[in-house]
Length: 495
Image (cartoon, rainbow, N blue to C red; front, side, top):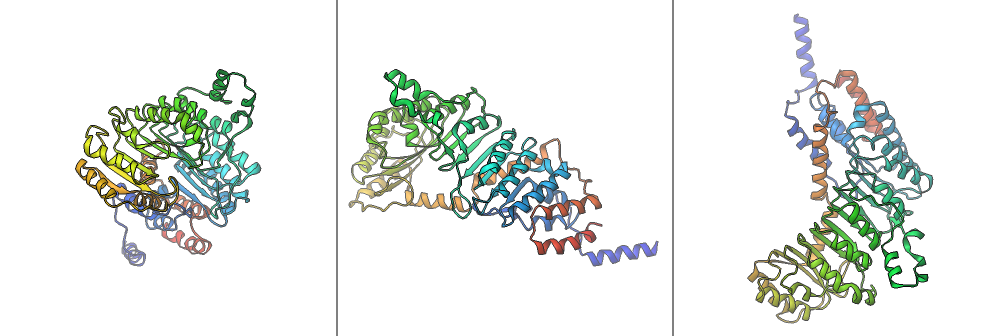
């Protein structure tokens, strides 16, 4: 008995202090701080595997966070992803933990990593995969395999696709519009989509190249509304956010209005909205609260003249619209002076072409028409030779013009912010983890503990703890040197 007591005291002295038994919620909060990263950082955490080896009470929490969001962006991507796939195949519990996959390739011509990613999505997609972020991808058969695997990700809630690798080289088009709509309607829990420029291609059926041979105006209008893929009304009833950078056409947004009638946030280009289907789509989405209209000053004036008033009227009549980002190049400030326009608008980000007449209209409205834009709380303005995108070259305000606008905003208790500051804030949000991503991470982690496959506190016995830590190494969470060192220490620490 005395020998056993002496051995126990010796073990305590040599192993150091015992980790405190903190509540799971506290450990989650602390461990989550190790995951702070920039928007472009796809390298996996080196800290969580070390935390998992501190004690048995820390192991399940660190393991959950490690596998909840998987980051694949190393220089040895194919090997890393393949080893991770073998780990998940051998451990159903770990496979069920995966909620998000962040994938970034350094070379758009490299297909091994994309093929391995397809295997991971096929493995985890049908179970609990909620978020997929693609920063580049390969082409060919690997891309075909990835699309097929994504069809089965029936619990997917958020999808981000950037068609450039992490060295800014372009990738091939991810899919045609018809293919993507077929995939999208297989994700009934989808909530948000963000597609950067040149993700999708306009296949021949979707481009209406045969419209030139259509005889009557009625036939042409019908052709503009026609899509060449099946549309299941209400298939995406929880989809709320569409951020599309020049991939869809107006009729695709109209189809989305049928598939996802509860969309509240829409980022779209001029060529989408300034069409007959685009106008109908705006009228079919009464729950819109945020609209951001992108475009170019080279957009045809004929379309602006034909559809400008219709788009403005459709936007002005949206009962729930709270945040509008638009340029005066295609929406003149006089639109905001109508007594019935924009009843719920709280934030206006306005890109102004001219610093005299257009600013005077805004100033007079704010000062002398208190019933116009009654809910407005924030106004961001930018003037310059470029009305959209990037940084504009500021024009010189005439004496007193901008000061008058500031005084009018003070009079209406509206916060005035120069659009340059807004763009800087936007860049900072891209370079750092955004509030939306932080909220997504919290939801994913909370989801882990609320599902039926919750971990068991008694699960981490000695053998399984060693096995899982080796799996962490296989998944590429540590570099080769740390793998060798931790592999030697883990056996003693978890014994």
